[in-house]
Length: 177
Image 1 (cartoon, helix red, strand yellow):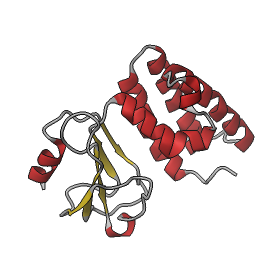
Image 2 (cartoon, rainbow, N blue to C red):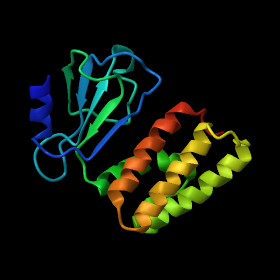
Image 3 (cartoon, helix red, strand yellow):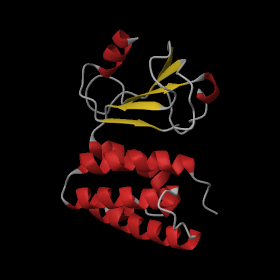
Image 4 (cartoon, one colour):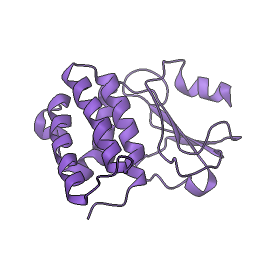
C-alpha cells in the first residue's frame, strides 16, 4: 500500500491531513483516489474508508478506488492540493452550506470570506445556546478564529488546516435547521 500511496501522490508534499469521520473506529478497506490535480501529476486527495463508509461521501467524486489493507483509520484524508484549492473545497463541501457565505461573491478573498463566516458562526453559537466549552460549535468558533487570523496575515496554509479541523467538527454536530 505505501507504494500505491507514493505513486498516487506523485511524490508531492502533503498539503493537508485530516480525518473527516472521527466517529468511526474501523480501519480502512478502500482507498478512494480523488480527481487528478489541476496542475501536475497525481491525485488531488486520497481518502481511506471502511466498508460502511465507502460510499458515504458522495460529494467527493472518486477518479478510482483501490483496496486497502487497513493502512489508515477510516476517514483519513491525505490532501495534495494547494491551500487555495483546499479552501475552495471546504467552501463547496460544508462552509457555504453552514454559513451561507459565498466565496465567489467576495472575490475569493479568503480573509473576507472567513471573517464573514466567523460572524455567522458566532450567531449560530448564540442561537443554539452552545455555551459549553466542548460543544462542536464552540470549538469550531475557536478554530475559525485561527483561520481568520491566518487568512488576514496571508497564511492560507494555516487557514486551510484550520478549516480541516472545522470540517471534522461539522460532521459531529446535528444539521442546522
